[in-house]
Image 1 (cartoon, rainbow, N blue to C red):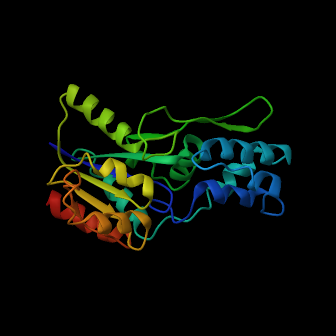
Image 2: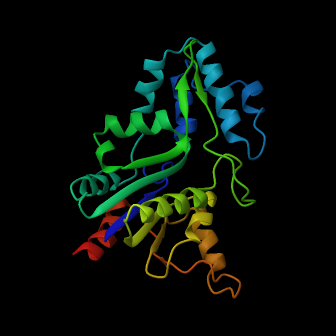
Length: 242
């Protein structure tokens, strides 16, 4: 019986938003209003496609994009936490469910030597086309009204757990670590002995506080432990394992 660690990525594993960090690869480190104002609510993936097309049109090379992404800072204590996970793979599985994209997350983890800690990444597929522009697609389609159109993290987590169960893997405990509004939906499929860990002062913690004690909130059963750094998460994890 293993422990499963589930992480969001932006403002959780890394201490910024990878999708906005990429703008630093532009000569003036900013987007024109025509691109900035093209965002439509709930369609972030399409917006990022336009951002990456603009970056390509400015003749910013893929290697330059990668080198900038590799400078994004990790949240305090996260490097140590992921190293611990990578050293204890016999008892810990680890996945990332993120609204970033496959290339950004892979680049960032590999540059820090932390990719071996993560067994699977569920995020928006990205690739460079023949022109050298990065293209970003939606992760999947779903019918959840709570989540962005490109990604329902609950659907991803439920499917992952179902496939693990079919393969004979059951998790003794699940830790869900996140910060944003789109991290609330997946916490409703956790059990009483699981742990949801919202980052202190961020949207997920505020939403969970609002729900606490409400009679109509039977779906959110997991224990809530807020955190400031990966060190606190590591302490909780060690307490379960030892």
